Length: 140
Image 1 (spheres, helix red, strand yellow):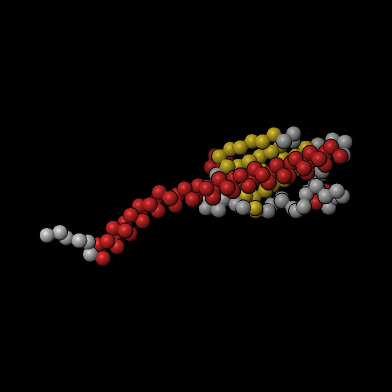
Image 2 (cartoon, helix red, strand yellow):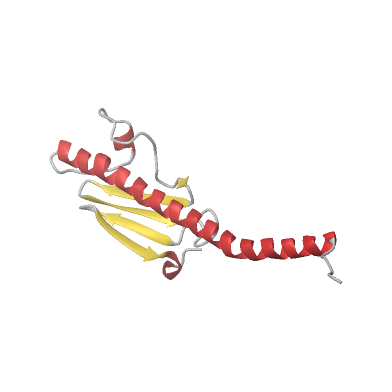
């Protein structure tokens, strides 16, 4: 005589299968979120540097802006918003500006945790990009 699974046994098997699938899928969604934030940080840095800082320098005989306000309040406007000390999609931005150059950092709000990123990005005068793992920088 054949024995069929009861509804409860079938439900337990289906639940175990779903839990197994979730254990493979959920970490990938977490990774995708971190990667998306990292890509956004890189794009934001490029927005600050290329059309803003380098264009300002070209328009002002090689002199860089001494403050972020010079980029936001100028005519033409080089930046549409303030970035310094603001958190955008898991990254905190730090702009160090002077008339002779700049250093911009995009640092994860919480290294490697949900809603943040795993890499620290730094850009210095001349659009020189540097990327390091945030855990080696003591970022929490």
